[in-house]
Structure formats: structure tokens, C-alpha cells
Length: 376
Image (cartoon, rainbow, N blue to C red; front, side):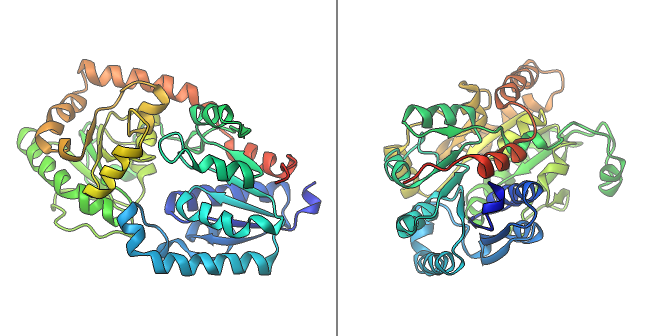
């Protein structure tokens, strides 16, 4: 069947999707090296050989207000994307996450007769469940990266495949990387708090002031504590203290962390796989929060807690996100002998078991190439 496929179009709109789509492309190339890839994406996809037409730097926004502010830009990109699909006439289209844009795209291209695959599905189980009505009519192939999500979509009549989770292909084992320690003048037994305020500018704007307060409070109580900020290249963070280490890759840093304070997001799951106890924070605009409160359907904001189906990690949301409330939990997690720290790490193992085994990109690629798409 791979011989009949000559071109894929991928629609990606944010950094995490860029990383996962690039790995998927490389796995697809293992099966069929001659397939051409074009679409919307970022630098990782370009490195993987994708002809990127619209870069994610102009697309990565989140929240109702932010989308409104960027409406004209996103509408222009949408129009351009539809045009590129009509010109390139791909054999299959792969949507990766980014549902606000991708489901609008689906409405524009649904009558072109091209099979549409959705890889990394919209979190319709959390809110906007009505999205499944459009998806059922237009999407040919559903691929989820969470087992509970797979069950939910299947229960709604959308046949969904679970190949595993991308993070299972990453080695997060705690190490004694001499280069990392020498680079930052650290000792092997130093306690290191990871600061993960987010990968979008609006997340930084909302979270960093509280992170700063917490940093200085901890510094008073634990003078020898070291701090490492993971800062994406696409964001600006002001007032970073001189004593804070800065790195751009969370994967490397996670191998050396003792505990973490993190914006809610997929990095929470990376922390769990690296066995780093984590405080999860979430703060957004009042309007965005009210919209979520009205339409949201989940008990937790952290994906780790959702997978575990219990509150493993403390969550501090909106007005609850204060340094005063965060501090006691962080101190427990930074104490290597604390009961809370040991309990959290023990429960992480159950989360990892639920996710399955490594190799998900190869399994997903094989599924995409070999599975007959449902006609719509």
C-alpha cells in the first residue's frame, strides 16, 4: 500500500507538535523513503525533510483572547493552507494536535476526497465534546497518545488506535553527566529545582512572577539549593536572578533534577517519567478561566493526574497559585527522605505502566501506511 502513497500533507501549529510530527515523518520514511512531505510546521520538521509552507512561529497561540488577537494572521494562514493542499493534492493529510486551527481546516477541505488522519487528538473529553460530531463525519483515522483518551473516543463511536506515548522513546533515567555538572559548576549531590514556566509567552507572563517569589522564598530557607530554568528560545523572560541556571532543553535537565515547579502541560508527564516530584501550576486570563470553568469537564489539570485517575501531584490554579501555598509542598519534595516524595515517585511507576512500551512512532507510522482509511 505504501507504493500508492507519494505525498503527505501535515498540519502542525505549535512546538510540541513540531517535535512529534518530525519523529513520525522519520518513521514513515523508514517504511517508504520516497514519500514527499509538505505542510505547516517548525524547525524540527524542516530537519526531518518536510517542505514547511507556514512556520509555527506565527501560529502558536493559546486561549480565547489570544486567538482573537491573532485572528487575522491565523485566517490568512488557514486560507494559504487550503490553497497549498489543493495545489499539492496529497494522498493523505495528517493533522497533529492544534484543534482550534485544524478543525477549522477540516471544514474547508472535507469535500476534497482526501483521507484525513488525526494524530494527537483534541482533548474533547476535557471540553468541547461536540467536536466529536464533526470529527466523526470527516476524519478517517484516529490515533491517540493516551490510553484513557483512546477508551473515551472509542466509547463515542470513533474507532481510535493507541500506539503508545512519544515520551516512552526518551531516556529520562537520572544520570551523573559530568559535562552538565561541570558546565554549571554543580556537585553531584546538589539539590536542583527545575523551573518550567511554559513554552508560550502568555504562560511566561502569567506564571513567572509567582515562580520568582517562590525562588526567593526557597533561597532563604535552603541557601544551598540550585535552580535551573528551562527557557524556550521563542519566549522572553525578564528578571531572571543571576544564580539561576538557564537551559533550553527539558530532556537533558530532567536527568538531573530533584524536584520541579511546572506550568500545566505535557512536561508534567516528562517529569513523572524522570521520577521528579512536581508542583503543577496554571494561571490564565479571567475570561479564559471562566470559559473553562463553564465548559470544562475534568477533575484535574495535570495529565499525570488524569492518567493515574487520582491526584498524585499538587495543583495550584488561578488564585490558588501563590508562593505561600506552593512553598510547603516544594520543601517536602526537596527533602530526599520525605514520605510525600517517596509516595509520589512510587505512584509514577503505575503511570508509566499504563502508557505501554517504547516504539510508538514506528507503530503509528505502520498504522498510517497499512491501515485502510474509513471513507467519509
